[in-house]
Amino acid sequence: MVETSLLSLIRERILVFTASRTGRDAAEDIAQETMLVILHRYSHLTEASELIPLAIQIARFKICSYYRKVKRRGEKEAIPIDDLQLSNGEPDPDTLMIRNQLKDKLRDAIPQLGERCRQIFRMKLEGLSFQQIQSELKAGSINMVYTWDLRCRKSLRELMGGLWATGGEQS
Image 1: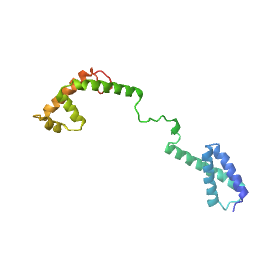
Image 2: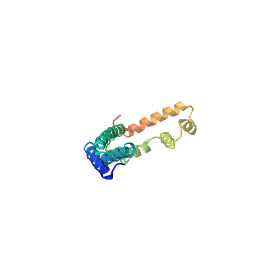
Image 3: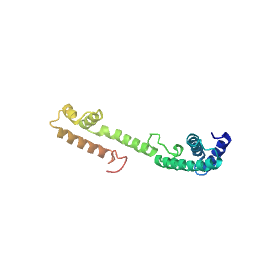
Image 4: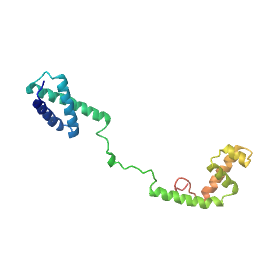
């Protein structure tokens, strides 16, 4: 069995060696793993001249393994969470302003539309399909409803000054 003083000397040397090649946290882990290998597989060795070079060689292998794992996991390229600019889910002020202007224009334009157009928009907002709108308005064919919808959207676009849901771009 290896003496405790020799083990502490080996651990100290391994820690210095690995800390110079990795960070302090990783060096602690690698030193611990190296010491476990020495205690379990090489407990028959008792001389410092045999154990120290062996421990350094094992530590080298452990360091290589550590860097492979870091590269595989992408830990070196990872950005700390504190450095990320996370969105709070709310739109930016410009988008809010454009959206509010569009809502105001829409509120002003809807009452100026004809009754049929207002009904079509109301039913679409309620989630009715074109077939359901056809039966509600008692239209002869679904193509008639498509045509009415197209004309209503065109009228609404004109009443809004050419602005549509694109956020203020001229169409």
